[in-house]
Length: 88
Image (cartoon, rainbow, N blue to C red; front, side, top):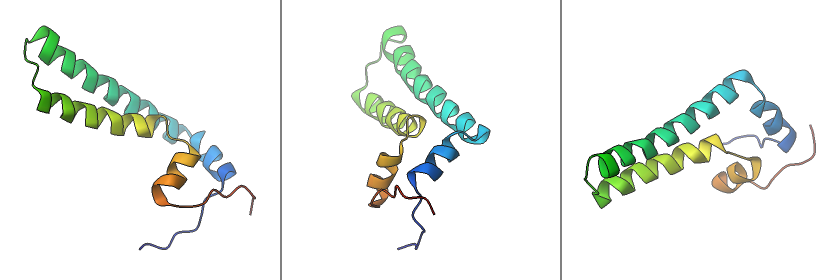
């Protein structure tokens, strides 16, 4: 396992306001929306409703949305870290 120093909720909140962070999160939202548009193009517009393709696109969209809407508690849960609220 990789050793990592815990990040506090204040540090995470500050990171969310970096221009590069906002740019990446906006891009993730665009990519999620694009996956939905791809499904509409294939199914509604193209007449193909392949369930495997839908699962693939939904999985990709879910991953992009997780990043686009990420919050401190979700990251802590994903890496099994207890939230740290005191500042350093």
